[in-house]
Length: 295
Image (cartoon, rainbow, N blue to C red; front, side, top):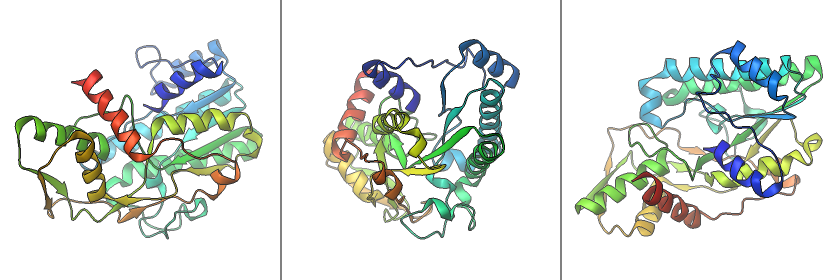
């Protein structure tokens, strides 16, 4: 999702982006990936690939989420280094933070406590790859950095109810409910957990923005909105965009994840950047993408 947004924005910024699909290069195959990088000789590598999904997907397949993301991340770093790539941006995740860390989450709190059990496998992979980027930079003088975005949504998102992240899953669920005339839609948990979501196109914008001042970007940096709202408020906002007038029911037998995941954006602010897309605009654009491109 982020890669496609980078590609779309780069075309407007006179930046050439090489974005191979899985059939062109298998990131789980180090030899294949190294050969690809040696041929194309990129100036910068942006690592935003991986196995992703919502709470249920992570609970169902912790090994897959840990192993595949760990292997992909280590292969990308190793292949970039072997190909003399001096700059690399590794995309982390706010799930890297301890479940009991103080909010807003500061980059210095990584590895200071236990991770959230519902996505622990994915988080372990993300933390490990971020540390590898840090280690290789310190040992060999390259500049491999980790950007830690808040939750993302937007164009080219996945809308599978069982495997997608919250906003695209809710868009599909509420649109289906409106289509069939359902009077209620369920919410996992009590709806009080708070989340920070950013339109993925804004993250792509920051990545391109940061390349012009890369030497000033710290080794690890949060990217976010600077505020969060409750899960129930997201449901209300999505229902408003779609025009659904039914009721919500809370399923307290389902996991809700961490109570809050708000990232500290002080370092982002120091670089002079802020997101351009407000929540309702982002949801509206994502909903139109779902209607026009997915259904």
